[in-house]
Image (tube, rainbow, N blue to C red; front, side, top):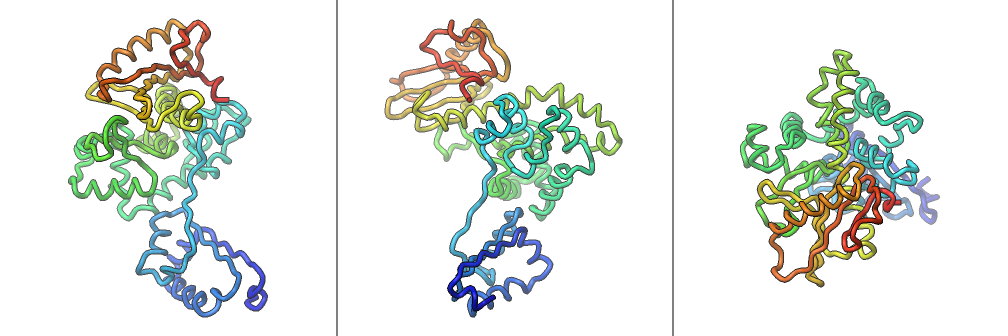
Length: 361
């Protein structure tokens, strides 16, 4: 094989490579020797991949035998919501499933499209032997050396303790230790730090939220209720989830709406910065900033069907909240609503931006 690859391309791909290394500590040294003395003179294209990010990083760090020998690296991101609309053939359905399953293709492939959402949740999350149920716990335990601390932080965020002080009070961890664990959770894409969109990235007013929808769903409904599954009280847990699911999807719908506006930047509105805004007890779902035109656009997101009367009331309240947003004294303001469905949309003043799922197509 060696002679044949001197002038001919051969691709060798090994998935979950870190677990092979874990079982054979000398493998990286063997690979280094082979590469330095033989393989680098061939046209072999060697690809290694793995789902455990911390273990993959350990393979390429300075102390690793193969350090400096890679020609490139790529972090495979989950699919974005807009990519799933064609797969499900329905925007509302795509939003619901994306809110629960996130954008990992392997988990999305586990969805039975002939069944409803709750039936899929029962089969994939509330069955103790299901692939997804087992895989989430395995992933978390393999990714982190001290999983109980990470679990505690994720549990705190799932229970809406999102500020640093709130997480400290919930977990009992010291601030210095908590900072270390949070950094790892951010680096591994489990959570993200958000600040009010009008503030600098150096602001201390940041909060922590889940980046992965499936992990958010798991820690909101499954992790603390695992005894329901073990005691075969699945129907009870299913009812708990069903009664709260629209509230949960309402939160993910805000992020989906931001993603939609980013993908359509310049078509619906134009901006150079977008995100959420909050101050004390006041919160606005989406605020977009156009520094060039001194324009600020405010949106409220509602995962429900609204009439034109409902929309006008929401806009009145939004205008009132917008007065508290400090950003440029001389500015142009626009206001909008994004909802599941807006009835009599054509009756709403054209100066407002009104978007529903029909616009997501």
